[in-house]
Amino acid sequence: MSGETAAAVRGRVYGTVQLRYTERGTPAARFTVLQVPREYDHTRGQWRDGEPVLVICTVTGPLARHVAECLTDAVHVIVTGNLALRDNVLYLDSAQVGVDLAHHVAYIDDTLPAVLAGRAPVQAQRVPTAPVPQPAAAHPGGRARPTTTARPAPAAAPGSDWWRSAPRTTRDAVTAPSRTGR
Image (cartoon, one colour):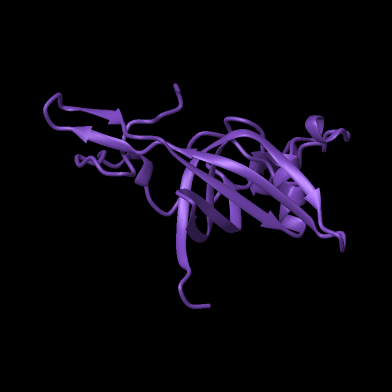
């Protein structure tokens, strides 16, 4: 469609998520995201909060049920969709909604710890062992007899030591101070 503005909004859920159903039974959720932009104050030499912006987000279909189940007040999210301005209010017809992993740990069904999922914990996998030949030991009959000892197979080494590399020296959106304290 023409005239739509694709946008991504990063902020916190403000208030509760409302879940309703249309006449045809399609779920629809509505929630508000409070986006507080960070600005660098050159006179003070520090970061500060800008003017807060409220964006009303709507989702439909299965995503609406997931949003209603997963999101609560003050959860940091990243929402993408089509942005519209109506009566001086920003509306976002959301296509994708995700938890901002810069502020939260998120589990999916496959990675949810067993204790939280209400199932028995899986026993740890045993590391395969391979016999390792040892130097021959003297046999009382004079013949050498090889011995073997089981030892875990070595793990694959990581491709590079990127986590030990020098930190970045520039400050940009990626390295800006965290806002988790708000």
